[in-house]
Structure formats: C-alpha cells, structure tokens
Image 1 (cartoon, chains in turn red, cyan):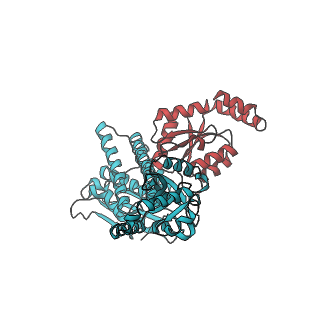
Image 2: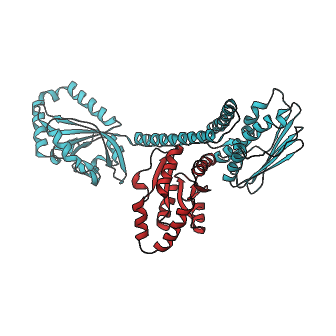
Image 3: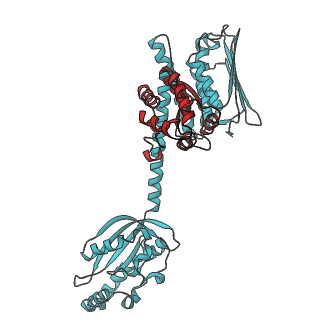
Length: 145
Length: 352
C-alpha cells in the first residue's frame, strides 16, 4: 500500500488536498462507509470494524452512498455489498467511486462465490460472505496503512 | 423426402458416380417389390422424424432435406437442396464444416456435437449434431447424413438451472451471514442463556423463511407472521393475545424486519413483560394508510411495571436497525402495565 499512496501523492492535481487529508487520516481513526441493505449483516460489519478501531457510517443503497460521499470528504474506505437495491449495484457503485473519488479504497462483498477480478475497479478488493472478523479487519488495515 | 429427384443434376460428380454405381449394383434388387416397400418405409421414417435429417455430398452441398429440417432451420426443401450446407452455419463457425467433412472422408462419425446453427429468419438455434458417412453398395463414401436435434429448450433449462444454483448459493450465504451476525451480536449472562437466545432468533428467521417458501418467495401474510412468532407463548384456547388488522401480504424484506422485531418484543414480553405473568394480555394491531405506510401497535396490558433498559442490547439495536433499514421508525414507551411500541414503515408494498 505504500507504493499506492506514493503514487497518489506524486500525481498532479488534487495531490495537495489529498496530502492534507492523508495527514488527518494518519492522526485519527479511519472512517469506513458500509453499504449493506441487510440490517443484521450490517450490524455485524459495524461491530467488527468498530471493535478494531475504525469509525463507521452506514447506508442501505448505492444511491445513498453517493449522496453521502458528495457531502463529506473524510471517508477513507467504502465497504459495499454487491447486491443492493436501487439504481446501482455495489460493483457499479465501486466504479463510480473509483472515477469520482479516486483516493477512496474499496472493498466489495457478496454471497456469490467470487466476483471476477476484471469486474473489480482498480485497487478494489473482494471478501466473500460470510466473512470472519480477522479477515475483514486485516483487509481494511492493509488498505489504510 | 424432397430432393431425391434433383440429386443427379445438383450433386457433386463424386456423389453422382456413387449413386450411379449404387443403382447399378442394386438394379435387380430395386425391381423387387419388397425392397421397394422397405425403401419407402425408411423414407417415411426419415420424413416423420422430429430431428432435422439432411443428406450432404462430400463437397458440402445439401442433397436431401426432411420435414424436421424444415422445422428446425425454417427453409423448405426446394429452397436449400443443391445449396452449400454453409448457409446454415453462422459466420463465426464456418471453420467447423471443413473439419467435419475431413472426418467423414476418413469414414469417421461425429457424435452428438453441440453447436449453433442459423435459421432462415436469422435466429440462432442450439443443436446436437450427429454426422455419419453414407456409403454406396461398393463401400465407397459418397456423402454424409447430418442429424440435428434442436436442443434450444434444454439449453434454456440448463441456463435456468445455473441461474437458480447461483441464486441458491447467494441466498444460503446471505442466510449464513445473518446467522453469523445473530451469534456474534447476541449476549446473555450464562452460556445456556446465550444458546437459548441465539436458537430463538435463528428460529424466528427460519419461521419467516418458511412463510416465504409457501408463497414462492413473494412475501408473507402479516397475520400469519405475527401469529407464528407469538405461537410459543400461546396456550390452547388462549384469550390473552389479540391480533387485529387487515389481511396484508408483506414483501420479503419488510416481512423479515417485522418478524425479527416481533420476535424480540415477544421474547422480551415473555421474560419481563405481560407474557411473563398469567393475567398479562397482549394486543397487536396494524393498519395501512393509503400511501402505503404501515403502522403496527404492540401493547402489553396487565403486566408488571417495566422500566427502560439500562443498556442497549442486541434486542433493541436489532429492532431499531431492522426498522431503520426500511426507512421506518420505532418508538417504545414503558409504562405501569407493560411495554408499548409503535412501528411505522413507509411505502410497504403489499398484495392481497
């Protein structure tokens, strides 16, 4: 992940702003936006991540996630279910985020065995349901390191 | 079988030669009425077959065409006899035919080869193809019979089964994730207490799933759903519970949320509330507004006085979370006769 951050900081354009943001992130808790429509599973994700020291926000659809991302710039990782109600599924949401908010890290989850790698956006990761705490937390920590 | 009369002028020299030799070799045989009868029998069998049976010369031209071929490919015999067989082959599969012909020339058979052909109207048709060499009386290969079975329906069924398998996998993984969440998020003071709490919650999820299965996953009747969650606390001829409301069919997401909430309220009432004492009563009333908003009142009567919980456990947070996920609201009131709860959910789609 070091190389990844170096790459982003070196890139022209929003580098300055991103540098400032990055410093804030390093000093505070990383904020994860959970996009999951199944309440019990969402509660589990909240518990797993908060117990591991992450801050969380949650919404139940991709449209709500986009609306929220438009209003705040402190979201570090988006953790989205692939199957979501509304106009976009989790994969489309991930691609939208990769284009509109390139610094945000992405983790997708699904009950389907595996999302094809070529369908994932750049730097996107996948974790199958049901997932264990250590695997999810390890994945998140590797992304925000 | 159409096309036989045109063979001599249309087909390749090789085939013509084969036919001529064949005729000569069996000249006397064809004069025999019994053999002629048998040939007619065989022709009738070919003609009545549901499979497309096409005769082809060794250089790839159609020499005969049965009714099954007309149905499968949409061409009449007169339209295709004498034409190259490649008119049936979609452009991206043109390389298949030379390979098939090569095997036929070597005297080999091609068995149940699954491929795609193009009908006259341009539509593609999935077929299972068997190609066998046709020999003359002298044993020389003079052409091929191509028997094609339309397997579009089987392909559609296979695709549907694959889709259902994916769906089943997806659903079962999600159910497991829900069970995992229930286990992880449940708390109790003793191991046995914890087991009971988890088992009850998993049973509540199983109950609502059973109702979904009964309606082929379109939803569940609200009355049945509530009655089912309350059934463990209901005695024979029990008048202490009253369920009042219109007959509503609730879609799966809302139904699951309501089932989980009712389960939590019921276990709480059985432990601390109106269902924990013999004289306690429970009323559950629901209604739906014209805009689809569903309102459900849970009222405990004659129970012990209850106080708000000192800490937010799984029960409260799961109820709030379930209702919030459906954009609804849940309000609790703790009073001297037991708990009251009001749940509202907007835009609940119901069917009668």
